[in-house]
Length: 294
Length: 247
Image (cartoon, rainbow over the protein chains, first blue to last red):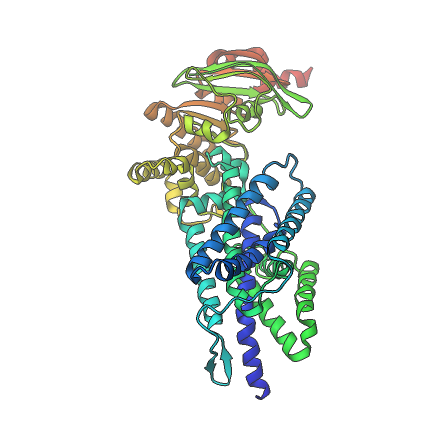
Protein backbone atom coordinates (compact mmCIF):
# COMPACT_ATOMS: atom_id res chain seq x y z
CA UNK A 1 0.00 0.00 0.00
CA UNK A 2 1.59 3.27 -1.03
CA UNK A 3 1.31 6.57 0.74
CA UNK A 4 -1.58 8.02 -1.25
CA UNK A 5 -3.66 4.92 -0.67
CA UNK A 6 -2.87 5.16 3.00
CA UNK A 7 -3.93 8.76 3.08
CA UNK A 8 -7.24 7.91 1.44
CA UNK A 9 -7.72 5.23 4.06
CA UNK A 10 -6.93 7.70 6.85
CA UNK A 11 -9.33 10.23 5.40
CA UNK A 12 -12.13 7.69 5.21
CA UNK A 13 -11.76 6.45 8.74
CA UNK A 14 -11.16 9.99 10.00
CA UNK A 15 -14.37 11.05 8.32
CA UNK A 16 -16.25 8.30 10.11
CA UNK A 17 -14.92 9.08 13.58
CA UNK A 18 -15.41 12.75 12.76
CA UNK A 19 -19.08 12.10 12.09
CA UNK A 20 -19.37 10.63 15.56
CA UNK A 21 -17.57 13.56 17.16
CA UNK A 22 -19.99 15.80 15.30
CA UNK A 23 -22.95 13.95 16.76
CA UNK A 24 -21.52 14.24 20.28
CA UNK A 25 -20.65 17.88 19.67
CA UNK A 26 -24.21 18.64 18.58
CA UNK A 27 -25.37 17.28 21.92
CA UNK A 28 -23.10 19.78 23.65
CA UNK A 29 -24.15 22.72 21.55
CA UNK A 30 -27.89 22.03 21.78
CA UNK A 31 -27.79 22.14 25.56
CA UNK A 32 -25.40 25.06 25.53
CA UNK A 33 -27.57 27.05 23.17
CA UNK A 34 -30.76 26.59 25.07
CA UNK A 35 -29.40 26.88 28.59
CA UNK A 36 -25.86 28.25 28.54
CA UNK A 37 -24.72 25.07 30.26
CA UNK A 38 -21.71 23.13 29.04
CA UNK A 39 -22.87 19.69 29.96
CA UNK A 40 -19.76 17.71 30.83
CA UNK A 41 -21.95 14.67 31.38
CA UNK A 42 -22.62 14.52 27.63
CA UNK A 43 -19.89 11.90 27.20
CA UNK A 44 -21.64 9.65 29.71
CA UNK A 45 -24.75 9.66 27.54
CA UNK A 46 -22.51 8.38 24.75
CA UNK A 47 -21.10 5.70 27.04
CA UNK A 48 -24.60 4.67 28.10
CA UNK A 49 -25.66 4.35 24.47
CA UNK A 50 -22.97 1.74 23.87
CA UNK A 51 -23.17 -0.03 27.22
CA UNK A 52 -26.96 -0.34 27.32
CA UNK A 53 -26.96 -1.69 23.77
CA UNK A 54 -24.33 -4.22 24.83
CA UNK A 55 -26.41 -5.17 27.86
CA UNK A 56 -29.59 -5.67 25.85
CA UNK A 57 -27.76 -7.69 23.20
CA UNK A 58 -25.64 -9.98 25.34
CA UNK A 59 -27.52 -10.27 28.61
CA UNK A 60 -31.12 -10.07 27.45
CA UNK A 61 -30.52 -11.42 23.91
CA UNK A 62 -32.80 -8.87 22.34
CA UNK A 63 -32.66 -8.37 18.57
CA UNK A 64 -30.46 -5.47 17.46
CA UNK A 65 -33.19 -2.94 16.56
CA UNK A 66 -34.90 -3.46 19.92
CA UNK A 67 -31.59 -3.08 21.73
CA UNK A 68 -30.87 0.20 19.94
CA UNK A 69 -34.30 1.65 20.66
CA UNK A 70 -33.95 0.49 24.26
CA UNK A 71 -30.55 2.17 24.55
CA UNK A 72 -31.92 5.49 23.29
CA UNK A 73 -34.90 5.20 25.63
CA UNK A 74 -32.85 4.43 28.74
CA UNK A 75 -30.24 7.09 28.01
CA UNK A 76 -33.00 9.64 27.49
CA UNK A 77 -34.54 8.69 30.83
CA UNK A 78 -31.13 9.23 32.43
CA UNK A 79 -30.92 12.62 30.67
CA UNK A 80 -34.34 13.60 32.01
CA UNK A 81 -33.47 12.49 35.55
CA UNK A 82 -30.20 14.37 35.33
CA UNK A 83 -31.97 17.58 34.37
CA UNK A 84 -34.71 17.15 36.98
CA UNK A 85 -32.51 16.10 39.89
CA UNK A 86 -29.25 17.92 39.24
CA UNK A 87 -29.89 20.96 37.05
CA UNK A 88 -33.38 22.21 37.86
CA UNK A 89 -33.03 22.41 41.64
CA UNK A 90 -29.99 24.71 41.44
CA UNK A 91 -30.88 27.97 43.14
CA UNK A 92 -28.02 30.04 41.78
CA UNK A 93 -27.05 28.70 38.38
CA UNK A 94 -23.67 30.39 38.01
CA UNK A 95 -21.41 28.94 35.31
CA UNK A 96 -19.01 27.55 37.90
CA UNK A 97 -21.78 25.78 39.82
CA UNK A 98 -23.09 24.28 36.62
CA UNK A 99 -19.69 23.04 35.50
CA UNK A 100 -19.09 21.39 38.85
CA UNK A 101 -22.53 19.84 38.89
CA UNK A 102 -22.30 18.40 35.38
CA UNK A 103 -18.82 17.03 36.11
CA UNK A 104 -20.14 15.58 39.35
CA UNK A 105 -23.06 14.06 37.47
CA UNK A 106 -20.73 12.50 34.95
CA UNK A 107 -18.63 10.91 37.69
CA UNK A 108 -21.78 9.53 39.29
CA UNK A 109 -23.12 8.06 36.04
CA UNK A 110 -19.72 6.55 35.22
CA UNK A 111 -19.48 5.06 38.72
CA UNK A 112 -22.93 3.52 38.51
CA UNK A 113 -22.12 2.06 35.10
CA UNK A 114 -18.97 0.52 36.57
CA UNK A 115 -20.97 -1.04 39.42
CA UNK A 116 -23.56 -2.46 37.04
CA UNK A 117 -21.37 -3.70 34.19
CA UNK A 118 -17.92 -3.99 35.74
CA UNK A 119 -14.64 -2.68 34.46
CA UNK A 120 -14.33 -4.94 31.45
CA UNK A 121 -14.26 -3.79 27.88
CA UNK A 122 -17.16 -5.15 25.87
CA UNK A 123 -17.62 -5.69 22.17
CA UNK A 124 -20.74 -5.16 20.11
CA UNK A 125 -21.03 -6.85 16.72
CA UNK A 126 -21.22 -4.58 13.66
CA UNK A 127 -24.80 -3.84 12.63
CA UNK A 128 -24.37 -5.56 9.27
CA UNK A 129 -21.40 -7.84 9.72
CA UNK A 130 -17.68 -7.22 9.64
CA UNK A 131 -16.93 -7.90 5.97
CA UNK A 132 -14.90 -4.91 4.68
CA UNK A 133 -16.04 -3.15 1.53
CA UNK A 134 -13.24 -2.40 -0.95
CA UNK A 135 -13.12 1.09 -2.40
CA UNK A 136 -10.17 1.11 -4.75
CA UNK A 137 -7.24 0.39 -2.49
CA UNK A 138 -8.96 1.58 0.65
CA UNK A 139 -11.52 -0.35 2.59
CA UNK A 140 -14.56 0.55 4.62
CA UNK A 141 -16.45 -1.42 7.21
CA UNK A 142 -20.21 -1.69 6.85
CA UNK A 143 -20.37 -0.01 10.25
CA UNK A 144 -18.84 3.10 8.68
CA UNK A 145 -21.84 3.31 6.37
CA UNK A 146 -24.15 3.06 9.36
CA UNK A 147 -22.23 5.89 10.97
CA UNK A 148 -22.56 8.13 7.90
CA UNK A 149 -26.21 7.21 7.48
CA UNK A 150 -27.32 7.72 11.07
CA UNK A 151 -25.31 10.91 11.52
CA UNK A 152 -26.71 12.41 8.33
CA UNK A 153 -30.21 11.45 9.35
CA UNK A 154 -29.85 12.96 12.81
CA UNK A 155 -28.46 16.18 11.37
CA UNK A 156 -31.30 16.48 8.87
CA UNK A 157 -33.95 15.74 11.48
CA UNK A 158 -32.53 18.27 13.91
CA UNK A 159 -32.22 20.88 11.18
CA UNK A 160 -35.87 20.41 10.27
CA UNK A 161 -36.88 20.44 13.92
CA UNK A 162 -35.07 23.67 14.76
CA UNK A 163 -36.02 25.53 11.59
CA UNK A 164 -39.50 24.39 10.72
CA UNK A 165 -41.39 23.34 13.84
CA UNK A 166 -42.86 25.69 16.39
CA UNK A 167 -41.22 23.81 19.28
CA UNK A 168 -37.84 23.97 17.60
CA UNK A 169 -38.20 27.67 16.94
CA UNK A 170 -39.32 28.15 20.53
CA UNK A 171 -36.13 26.46 21.71
CA UNK A 172 -34.03 28.78 19.57
CA UNK A 173 -35.96 31.78 20.87
CA UNK A 174 -35.39 30.58 24.39
CA UNK A 175 -31.70 30.18 23.74
CA UNK A 176 -31.41 33.70 22.41
CA UNK A 177 -33.47 35.46 25.04
CA UNK A 178 -35.15 33.44 27.79
CA UNK A 179 -36.84 36.51 29.31
CA UNK A 180 -38.49 37.52 26.08
CA UNK A 181 -39.39 33.88 25.49
CA UNK A 182 -41.24 33.65 28.77
CA UNK A 183 -43.06 36.89 27.92
CA UNK A 184 -44.65 35.19 24.93
CA UNK A 185 -45.66 32.21 27.01
CA UNK A 186 -42.80 29.80 26.40
CA UNK A 187 -42.12 27.73 29.50
CA UNK A 188 -38.36 28.10 29.69
CA UNK A 189 -37.81 25.19 32.08
CA UNK A 190 -39.67 22.89 29.75
CA UNK A 191 -37.35 23.93 26.91
CA UNK A 192 -34.34 23.14 29.09
CA UNK A 193 -35.75 19.68 29.72
CA UNK A 194 -36.36 19.28 25.97
CA UNK A 195 -32.78 20.13 25.20
CA UNK A 196 -31.57 17.47 27.62
CA UNK A 197 -33.89 14.93 26.02
CA UNK A 198 -32.60 15.70 22.53
CA UNK A 199 -28.96 15.75 23.58
CA UNK A 200 -29.08 12.54 25.55
CA UNK A 201 -30.85 10.76 22.70
CA UNK A 202 -28.23 12.04 20.24
CA UNK A 203 -25.42 11.06 22.58
CA UNK A 204 -26.74 7.54 22.94
CA UNK A 205 -26.89 7.15 19.16
CA UNK A 206 -23.31 8.28 18.84
CA UNK A 207 -22.46 5.72 21.53
CA UNK A 208 -23.99 2.73 19.84
CA UNK A 209 -22.82 3.45 16.32
CA UNK A 210 -19.21 3.77 17.42
CA UNK A 211 -19.20 0.85 19.86
CA UNK A 212 -18.75 -1.87 17.19
CA UNK A 213 -15.58 -0.11 15.97
CA UNK A 214 -13.88 0.78 19.21
CA UNK A 215 -15.47 -1.52 21.81
CA UNK A 216 -17.07 0.02 24.85
CA UNK A 217 -16.52 0.18 28.58
CA UNK A 218 -17.75 2.21 31.52
CA UNK A 219 -15.12 4.92 30.99
CA UNK A 220 -15.25 5.64 27.24
CA UNK A 221 -17.43 8.66 27.93
CA UNK A 222 -14.60 10.89 29.15
CA UNK A 223 -12.56 10.81 25.98
CA UNK A 224 -15.50 10.78 23.58
CA UNK A 225 -17.12 13.61 25.50
CA UNK A 226 -13.99 15.72 25.29
CA UNK A 227 -13.66 15.06 21.56
CA UNK A 228 -17.27 16.08 21.05
CA UNK A 229 -16.68 19.19 23.14
CA UNK A 230 -13.69 19.98 20.95
CA UNK A 231 -15.82 19.58 17.81
CA UNK A 232 -18.41 21.94 19.25
CA UNK A 233 -15.71 24.49 20.13
CA UNK A 234 -14.25 24.37 16.62
CA UNK A 235 -17.76 24.97 15.33
CA UNK A 236 -18.30 27.89 17.68
CA UNK A 237 -20.98 26.02 19.67
CA UNK A 238 -23.39 26.35 16.79
CA UNK A 239 -26.09 23.73 16.79
CA UNK A 240 -25.78 23.39 13.06
CA UNK A 241 -23.23 22.72 10.39
CA UNK A 242 -20.37 24.46 12.23
CA UNK A 243 -20.21 21.69 14.79
CA UNK A 244 -20.60 19.04 12.10
CA UNK A 245 -17.61 20.41 10.20
CA UNK A 246 -15.76 20.80 13.48
CA UNK A 247 -16.24 17.11 14.20
CA UNK A 248 -15.17 16.05 10.73
CA UNK A 249 -12.08 18.27 10.74
CA UNK A 250 -11.13 16.88 14.11
CA UNK A 251 -11.71 13.27 13.06
CA UNK A 252 -9.62 13.66 9.90
CA UNK A 253 -6.74 15.49 11.59
CA UNK A 254 -6.69 12.91 14.33
CA UNK A 255 -6.61 10.05 11.91
CA UNK A 256 -3.88 11.68 9.78
CA UNK A 257 -1.88 12.51 12.89
CA UNK A 258 -2.14 8.98 14.21
CA UNK A 259 -1.34 7.43 10.85
CA UNK A 260 1.47 9.67 9.63
CA UNK A 261 3.14 10.72 12.86
CA UNK A 262 2.43 8.28 15.62
CA UNK A 263 -0.71 6.71 16.99
CA UNK A 264 0.46 7.76 20.44
CA UNK A 265 -0.41 11.35 19.53
CA UNK A 266 -3.96 10.54 18.46
CA UNK A 267 -5.66 12.10 21.46
CA UNK A 268 -3.15 14.91 21.73
CA UNK A 269 -4.29 16.22 18.34
CA UNK A 270 -7.73 17.00 19.70
CA UNK A 271 -6.42 18.87 22.69
CA UNK A 272 -3.86 20.85 20.76
CA UNK A 273 -6.64 21.95 18.41
CA UNK A 274 -8.90 22.72 21.35
CA UNK A 275 -6.27 24.91 22.98
CA UNK A 276 -5.36 26.65 19.73
CA UNK A 277 -8.97 27.47 18.99
CA UNK A 278 -9.57 28.76 22.50
CA UNK A 279 -6.45 30.93 22.31
CA UNK A 280 -6.83 32.24 18.78
CA UNK A 281 -10.48 32.10 17.78
CA UNK A 282 -12.66 31.48 20.81
CA UNK A 283 -15.79 32.16 18.78
CA UNK A 284 -15.05 29.10 16.61
CA UNK A 285 -13.63 29.04 13.12
CA UNK A 286 -16.93 29.34 11.28
CA UNK A 287 -18.50 32.13 13.23
CA UNK A 288 -17.95 35.76 12.55
CA UNK A 289 -17.37 37.79 15.66
CA UNK A 290 -20.68 38.97 17.06
CA UNK A 291 -21.91 42.22 15.77
CA UNK A 292 -25.43 43.26 16.40
CA UNK A 293 -27.71 46.14 15.95
CA UNK A 294 -29.28 47.86 18.93
CA UNK B 1 -60.56 44.35 34.29
CA UNK B 2 -57.27 44.57 36.15
CA UNK B 3 -56.88 45.53 39.77
CA UNK B 4 -53.58 45.82 41.55
CA UNK B 5 -53.92 46.10 45.32
CA UNK B 6 -51.07 47.14 47.56
CA UNK B 7 -48.30 45.24 45.86
CA UNK B 8 -44.74 45.33 47.10
CA UNK B 9 -41.93 44.06 44.89
CA UNK B 10 -38.31 43.65 45.83
CA UNK B 11 -35.12 43.24 43.82
CA UNK B 12 -33.07 41.50 46.45
CA UNK B 13 -33.09 44.07 49.23
CA UNK B 14 -34.22 46.97 47.06
CA UNK B 15 -37.85 47.82 47.70
CA UNK B 16 -38.89 48.65 44.13
CA UNK B 17 -42.66 48.94 44.48
CA UNK B 18 -44.14 50.30 47.69
CA UNK B 19 -47.83 49.57 48.24
CA UNK B 20 -48.75 50.26 44.65
CA UNK B 21 -52.41 50.08 43.75
CA UNK B 22 -53.94 50.79 40.39
CA UNK B 23 -56.71 49.57 38.14
CA UNK B 24 -57.63 49.37 34.48
CA UNK B 25 -61.12 49.22 33.05
CA UNK B 26 -61.78 47.15 29.96
CA UNK B 27 -61.00 49.02 26.77
CA UNK B 28 -59.01 51.76 28.46
CA UNK B 29 -55.61 53.08 27.56
CA UNK B 30 -53.81 53.92 30.78
CA UNK B 31 -50.35 55.39 30.91
CA UNK B 32 -47.72 55.13 33.62
CA UNK B 33 -45.42 58.12 33.87
CA UNK B 34 -42.38 58.71 35.99
CA UNK B 35 -38.65 59.22 35.94
CA UNK B 36 -36.15 56.44 35.42
CA UNK B 37 -36.15 54.05 38.35
CA UNK B 38 -39.61 55.07 39.52
CA UNK B 39 -40.86 51.50 39.17
CA UNK B 40 -42.88 51.64 35.96
CA UNK B 41 -41.15 48.72 34.32
CA UNK B 42 -41.26 46.84 37.61
CA UNK B 43 -45.04 47.08 37.60
CA UNK B 44 -45.15 45.51 34.15
CA UNK B 45 -42.70 42.81 35.14
CA UNK B 46 -44.64 42.06 38.29
CA UNK B 47 -47.79 41.72 36.19
CA UNK B 48 -45.98 39.41 33.76
CA UNK B 49 -44.63 37.39 36.72
CA UNK B 50 -41.00 37.98 35.77
CA UNK B 51 -40.37 39.62 39.15
CA UNK B 52 -43.20 38.28 41.30
CA UNK B 53 -44.74 40.53 43.94
CA UNK B 54 -43.56 40.05 47.50
CA UNK B 55 -47.00 40.86 48.84
CA UNK B 56 -50.32 42.23 47.67
CA UNK B 57 -52.97 41.07 45.24
CA UNK B 58 -53.37 41.25 41.50
CA UNK B 59 -56.84 40.54 40.17
CA UNK B 60 -57.47 39.96 36.48
CA UNK B 61 -61.17 39.75 35.69
CA UNK B 62 -61.83 38.90 39.31
CA UNK B 63 -59.29 36.07 39.63
CA UNK B 64 -56.04 36.25 41.62
CA UNK B 65 -53.05 35.96 39.29
CA UNK B 66 -50.05 37.10 41.35
CA UNK B 67 -48.79 33.57 41.97
CA UNK B 68 -49.05 32.30 38.39
CA UNK B 69 -45.95 31.58 36.25
CA UNK B 70 -45.26 33.80 33.21
CA UNK B 71 -46.68 31.41 30.62
CA UNK B 72 -50.02 31.19 32.44
CA UNK B 73 -50.23 34.98 32.49
CA UNK B 74 -49.81 35.06 28.72
CA UNK B 75 -52.41 32.36 28.40
CA UNK B 76 -54.89 34.56 30.30
CA UNK B 77 -54.36 37.24 27.69
CA UNK B 78 -51.85 39.58 29.34
CA UNK B 79 -48.94 40.19 26.98
CA UNK B 80 -45.97 42.43 27.46
CA UNK B 81 -43.96 44.20 24.79
CA UNK B 82 -40.72 44.57 26.73
CA UNK B 83 -38.48 47.59 26.90
CA UNK B 84 -35.83 47.56 24.19
CA UNK B 85 -38.01 45.35 21.90
CA UNK B 86 -36.15 42.11 22.67
CA UNK B 87 -37.07 40.45 19.41
CA UNK B 88 -35.43 37.12 18.63
CA UNK B 89 -32.68 38.47 16.41
CA UNK B 90 -31.38 35.25 14.87
CA UNK B 91 -34.89 34.23 13.78
CA UNK B 92 -36.80 35.54 10.79
CA UNK B 93 -39.50 38.17 11.11
CA UNK B 94 -42.18 35.62 10.35
CA UNK B 95 -40.76 33.14 12.87
CA UNK B 96 -40.85 35.85 15.52
CA UNK B 97 -44.49 36.52 14.78
CA UNK B 98 -45.36 32.83 14.74
CA UNK B 99 -43.70 32.40 18.11
CA UNK B 100 -46.00 35.09 19.45
CA UNK B 101 -48.76 32.56 18.92
CA UNK B 102 -46.74 29.79 20.59
CA UNK B 103 -49.37 28.99 23.22
CA UNK B 104 -52.09 28.95 20.59
CA UNK B 105 -50.12 26.39 18.57
CA UNK B 106 -49.67 24.35 21.70
CA UNK B 107 -53.35 24.42 22.56
CA UNK B 108 -54.02 22.95 19.11
CA UNK B 109 -55.85 25.98 17.90
CA UNK B 110 -56.58 25.84 14.18
CA UNK B 111 -53.71 27.06 11.99
CA UNK B 112 -56.27 29.04 10.00
CA UNK B 113 -57.03 31.45 12.82
CA UNK B 114 -53.33 32.02 13.50
CA UNK B 115 -52.65 32.60 9.82
CA UNK B 116 -55.45 35.18 9.76
CA UNK B 117 -53.95 37.03 12.69
CA UNK B 118 -50.61 36.99 10.93
CA UNK B 119 -52.24 38.70 7.94
CA UNK B 120 -53.76 41.24 10.33
CA UNK B 121 -50.39 42.07 11.82
CA UNK B 122 -48.98 42.49 8.31
CA UNK B 123 -51.85 44.87 7.55
CA UNK B 124 -51.07 46.93 10.64
CA UNK B 125 -47.36 46.97 9.82
CA UNK B 126 -46.89 46.57 6.07
CA UNK B 127 -43.15 46.97 6.55
CA UNK B 128 -43.00 43.65 8.37
CA UNK B 129 -44.59 41.97 5.36
CA UNK B 130 -41.83 43.35 3.14
CA UNK B 131 -39.24 41.92 5.48
CA UNK B 132 -40.93 38.71 6.53
CA UNK B 133 -38.02 36.45 5.54
CA UNK B 134 -35.28 38.67 6.94
CA UNK B 135 -33.53 37.98 10.22
CA UNK B 136 -35.07 40.15 12.92
CA UNK B 137 -31.62 41.40 13.92
CA UNK B 138 -31.24 43.16 10.58
CA UNK B 139 -34.30 45.35 11.10
CA UNK B 140 -34.09 49.00 12.09
CA UNK B 141 -35.06 50.01 15.63
CA UNK B 142 -38.52 51.11 14.55
CA UNK B 143 -39.15 47.93 12.63
CA UNK B 144 -38.00 45.87 15.60
CA UNK B 145 -40.49 47.75 17.76
CA UNK B 146 -43.24 46.98 15.25
CA UNK B 147 -42.17 43.37 15.29
CA UNK B 148 -42.22 43.25 19.09
CA UNK B 149 -45.75 44.66 19.12
CA UNK B 150 -46.82 42.34 16.32
CA UNK B 151 -45.38 39.38 18.18
CA UNK B 152 -47.41 40.26 21.28
CA UNK B 153 -50.56 40.72 19.17
CA UNK B 154 -50.19 37.20 17.80
CA UNK B 155 -51.12 35.93 21.25
CA UNK B 156 -54.47 37.77 20.97
CA UNK B 157 -53.93 39.79 24.14
CA UNK B 158 -56.83 41.33 25.98
CA UNK B 159 -54.47 43.44 28.02
CA UNK B 160 -51.37 44.73 26.28
CA UNK B 161 -48.48 45.98 28.39
CA UNK B 162 -46.23 48.32 26.44
CA UNK B 163 -42.88 49.33 27.88
CA UNK B 164 -41.53 52.51 26.31
CA UNK B 165 -42.44 51.74 22.71
CA UNK B 166 -41.09 55.10 21.54
CA UNK B 167 -37.65 54.75 23.07
CA UNK B 168 -34.91 55.73 20.67
CA UNK B 169 -37.17 56.00 17.64
CA UNK B 170 -37.65 58.72 15.06
CA UNK B 171 -40.75 60.91 15.61
CA UNK B 172 -42.48 59.68 12.45
CA UNK B 173 -42.18 56.07 13.55
CA UNK B 174 -43.37 56.94 17.03
CA UNK B 175 -46.47 58.45 15.43
CA UNK B 176 -47.06 55.32 13.42
CA UNK B 177 -46.76 53.13 16.50
CA UNK B 178 -49.11 55.29 18.54
CA UNK B 179 -51.59 55.25 15.68
CA UNK B 180 -51.52 51.45 15.73
CA UNK B 181 -52.17 51.37 19.47
CA UNK B 182 -55.25 53.50 19.00
CA UNK B 183 -56.42 51.35 16.10
CA UNK B 184 -56.11 48.29 18.31
CA UNK B 185 -58.33 49.78 20.94
CA UNK B 186 -60.94 50.83 18.40
CA UNK B 187 -60.96 47.60 16.43
CA UNK B 188 -60.37 44.87 19.00
CA UNK B 189 -61.12 46.65 22.26
CA UNK B 190 -57.66 45.81 23.57
CA UNK B 191 -56.92 47.33 26.95
CA UNK B 192 -53.51 48.97 27.07
CA UNK B 193 -51.16 49.80 29.91
CA UNK B 194 -48.52 52.07 28.44
CA UNK B 195 -45.25 53.02 30.09
CA UNK B 196 -43.77 56.05 28.37
CA UNK B 197 -41.04 58.60 28.65
CA UNK B 198 -42.76 60.65 26.01
CA UNK B 199 -45.32 61.90 28.53
CA UNK B 200 -47.07 64.38 26.28
CA UNK B 201 -47.81 61.94 23.48
CA UNK B 202 -48.81 59.27 25.96
CA UNK B 203 -51.23 61.55 27.83
CA UNK B 204 -52.77 62.77 24.59
CA UNK B 205 -53.69 59.25 23.63
CA UNK B 206 -54.51 57.78 27.03
CA UNK B 207 -57.76 57.92 28.98
CA UNK B 208 -56.13 58.00 32.37
CA UNK B 209 -52.66 58.15 33.82
CA UNK B 210 -50.66 57.34 36.93
CA UNK B 211 -47.54 59.22 37.93
CA UNK B 212 -44.91 57.32 39.86
CA UNK B 213 -41.95 58.38 41.91
CA UNK B 214 -39.46 56.14 43.76
CA UNK B 215 -41.71 53.10 43.79
CA UNK B 216 -44.93 54.87 44.75
CA UNK B 217 -47.92 56.17 42.84
CA UNK B 218 -47.98 59.87 43.67
CA UNK B 219 -50.66 61.11 41.34
CA UNK B 220 -53.48 59.66 39.30
CA UNK B 221 -56.21 61.07 37.18
CA UNK B 222 -57.85 61.57 33.83
CA UNK B 223 -55.23 62.10 31.14
CA UNK B 224 -56.44 65.53 30.08
CA UNK B 225 -56.26 66.75 33.68
CA UNK B 226 -52.79 65.36 34.16
CA UNK B 227 -51.77 67.14 31.00
CA UNK B 228 -52.85 70.42 32.65
CA UNK B 229 -51.41 69.57 36.06
CA UNK B 230 -48.65 71.99 37.02
CA UNK B 231 -46.57 69.38 38.78
CA UNK B 232 -46.73 66.98 35.83
CA UNK B 233 -45.93 69.78 33.41
CA UNK B 234 -42.91 70.82 35.35
CA UNK B 235 -41.54 67.34 35.95
CA UNK B 236 -42.38 65.49 32.74
CA UNK B 237 -43.45 67.88 30.04
CA UNK B 238 -40.64 70.36 30.37
CA UNK B 239 -42.92 73.39 30.55
CA UNK B 240 -41.91 76.34 32.72
CA UNK B 241 -38.39 75.18 32.24
CA UNK B 242 -37.67 78.48 30.62
CA UNK B 243 -38.98 80.40 33.57
CA UNK B 244 -36.83 78.38 35.92
CA UNK B 245 -33.89 78.98 33.65
CA UNK B 246 -34.41 82.72 33.60
CA UNK B 247 -34.83 83.09 37.32
